[in-house]
Length: 65
Image (cartoon, rainbow, N blue to C red; front, side):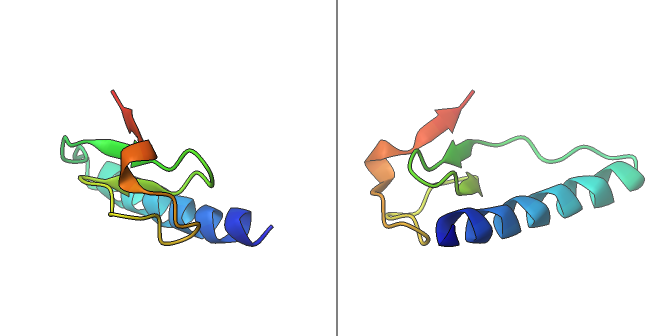
């Protein structure tokens, strides 16, 4: 449950950014999105060397196309 709680805080921040951009009638900048396959932590741009929540290595992250 700790992983889920921490990841949902990350997701909430991403939603807040998206809402702010939408209210400004703009688009989010294009870029890569990476998701940790273990806990679901999500990163815009580049993935870290290891997931800060569960420690999964970067090589195992899924790039969203």
